[in-house]
Length: 406
Image (tube, rainbow, N blue to C red):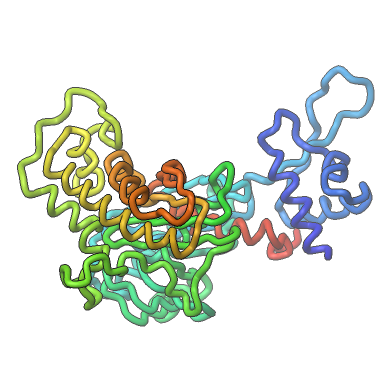
């Protein structure tokens, strides 16, 4: 009961941190329905565990003692998110308020490299990031690693299969240099969906989050909970067959969505003609930010699409049709409140949404469906890494006793 009450009090303070006047102990008692004495005891413990701080409020001209304002600490406990992508390594630190404090990204060609070497480099990046966090007064309380692969349910820190990396049955503890800092692996699409759920205002309780990088992943959030499936394999949308006799996929099957709406398929089709000259000014999508970074295929696609490059536009239209076909099946099966395009799809949404929405309108006919139920994520490609870091923070918010006292 005390653990639950600690969470309630901490959550009440966190929920009101954006208001002009922070909450006092009496304010919290009035909001959570506990006595002032009980709240005072809980607040003292949360301060002792480093989750809350308390300070005098500035005088406002009223007679009496100055008020005391509670706030979630911006130092101390933090979550570390790590990411191993096909073309990069990433790290992110989020404080207990849910605010990202550090972002790190290192370009690496990880496909086909030995898992031990990739994990050693990820561990080095993690150590560097933790040191930077410590200089900011932050203490990492948990580590979660986003990977583009299948992570089975249960303990063991095992990546069962990550075909785009070339990994099969990789146990992190066998390769991580420091046994005390081995991160918990999780599928990147799952983490992107959780970040979306935790960050969106207002939150949608049941939705499908689909994202693309080198492959295509999806995650299901049902009634606010991530649905992982019986063994952790739920969400393999990229390997749903949309053309039974189509192109052979790396997974061994034919006609998988990934072969028609994945980054490689779209990029290859869009590169069959010379690129157009640079646009004279910003024109939607990601192109307004300037030229695409070297080696970033998604930014290059967005730049070409914004410039009206016909092969790229046609490739994105075909990808949208294929994606819409797969998502129509997901809508009919799951009956979600919404669909979210994350990852690279979010950055290409200006050109994907029309064809995806057209397919959904044509195929979802047995239930009401509104075009606005499909939307891009505001997090884009940062979603999985942010979700990895937020996982630790959310656990602490749900159970503050995970933090040591004093």
